[in-house]
Length: 414
Image: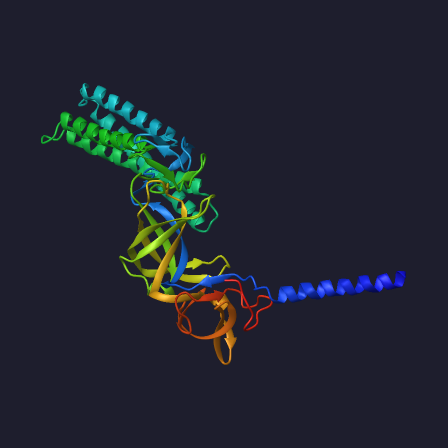
């Protein structure tokens, strides 16, 4: 009796499974479908761009020397007149004080009668000139030696600058003593006079003092306008050469986007072409338009992310930034160039197309049943294809041609 009931139960289970299979075979497949409609298809490529200020002020040092203070940092917003960098002016201040002392001495001597002491004064002045010339010769020899070592990498930059400054000071001293001797000789010339001597001496000393005061003033550099500090390239304690750019000041206002395009792609880019600028944000990408404003006349060498050397051309884009989007100098954006476009096309993803009878085809759903539809391809880009034959608006295309259960004539949910 128990065996009989077991056979009945087993038969019922088999019938139930068969019933489910039969039921499922009559159920339409649930597939991801694309309803075809006419739209545009374009060829595009994307390069990384960088926002830069359309108005940049390079900040350079006139005198050079040791950096003693940098009260700003890169990215800091500063106002016009803000101290940006300060160089050591100690030596220049000492030299200026020495010249001021000499001016006072010259003013005192002007009141004296030099005639009785002319010979002694002349001898003293010649001795001073000879001493200055010996010092200059020694300074020149030292500078030549240090220069040779510096060019060979055997002397430091500080040693080179010290030798250069010593030579300049020695030459200045020869010039001063020479002028003093010439003025002294003219003092008793009938065509000259003591007043002309002292006038020339004081004029020479004042010119030296003016130059030193200018150099001292240039040891502190202030912001020429409101802006943002960028490309800060020196540190406190570092010694820099004269006329070295130490930072850039980016003025607030107009921005431009600079990107570098491969030489094989730049031929499709024209001035005035519209592009899409894409900013990566936490809550999703934001896109806004821009216009190509300049294309560099020559290429430069760049290193790709894979370490390969590439020839690229700089392309400048003027962005049309919406009011609710913030872009500052240094921000990275993607620049999407559209090099070709076809409008009013029946477009499908490339992944939906499969080889069929020496051509191409799509799975489509017509009147609720699956059907293989041969097609002819037209314009295409990296991800999509325009179908020129085999489709019409309103057709339903199966997006995954590898989906399980695909068979011609089988019902599909539309």
